[in-house]
Image (cartoon, rainbow, N blue to C red; front, side, top):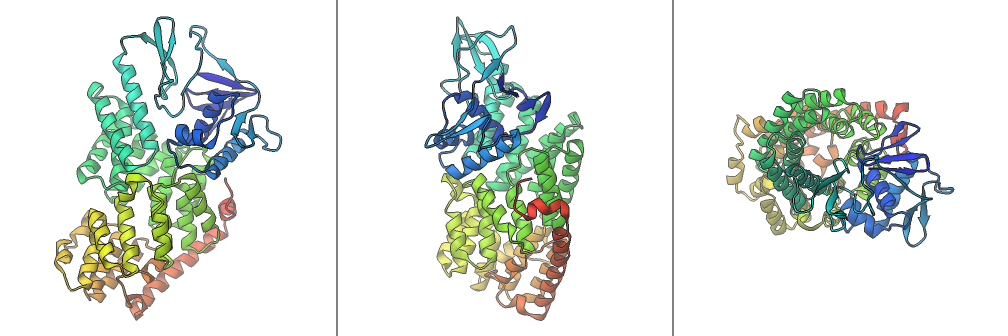
Length: 522
């Protein structure tokens, strides 16, 4: 389906906007907002409708919608003071300026209303009856498909199922992610070799694993699917992204880094892949490179849900004032989102403000309040406040996410059973399974709690070698006590500060990063 708005051609099949045969790349949310406005024209559309039909949520604020409208206007070259495309209707929301012309192929029957074409969500208004045939619209192509009124082709049913799964995944919530996985498995029963369904399933499984406590079996399944996809289509950037994501979910950061590099090389405009690559550089302490990649992702015009919070993380580590601006942008664009909420809570914890951490953690929605990383951070905040009983409940409910803190808390109370279960032997089995800097910090907390300070300091030193740059987290850990004020602890913090000073000079001296440092959109 194509629509013409003055000099803009809006193609809902390819999800692009064109002006004079030149593509205007829009992030997914911006495109969905534009389509929502077109679908509603000439009537205005308000925050409540945007929330339900674009964000799939009842909790999006006026500020979030306004910011997205601002981004959309900037992308299509619209002046809010003299609008040519989108006008603000006081008290009602936003509306299209002028009329919309629908462009259809000559062979396509005339539809009386292009209803509910947003986000691939099939609603009661989606089916449009024309004569004796039924027509429906799917988000993959937004095409009108003629089928008999009493029969639907299996391919078309699968399109709907897969589109619904994608819409569920866009919500980035625990229950919806599990529903999406179930839908995709159902679709693959009908078409086992379908590439897009397998690709989406791999991403969904990795999302569940990294954000909502998925199992090791699901992590490996995500990798198996992605490897098969890269074999079938070695030139697919998205397939390599899926593989990188699956590897990252297993803590295999070096392998993940390589896969994301392939994905970004195949398609420099694959914003999620480039932003994910930036995150891996952030974990390695390469903050300057991370920010350059985030800028590349934003310039590509794609959509990356975590770009703003990752920019905030890098800037906060070098204590740059723009960190707060990017943090607020992340919260505004992703209200209640688990990863964003978690990182903001960590920011408060590293500043020694557990009450503020608990307040932001309370902003998660529904089942996401039980997401393991939310429970883990709530436990740390409660423990810092001296609420040992509440902390234990949260750590236990967090499962594997809370096992390290639970072991450290128990060790401080003289109970080393959990410590022994986590393999605190010379072999360090946990390190073999998850060779990341953060795992070493968590293990160091257990050692420190058990009074084995020299071993704890060695683990922290190893973590710094791997890229750990968060000295404030070490200072405010409820399990290190006076460890970081010891001579060796001070030496470790000095190492961190020296490296951060180098990164700060690289970042603040970069003209290319000036838009990020001023908190502006790129």
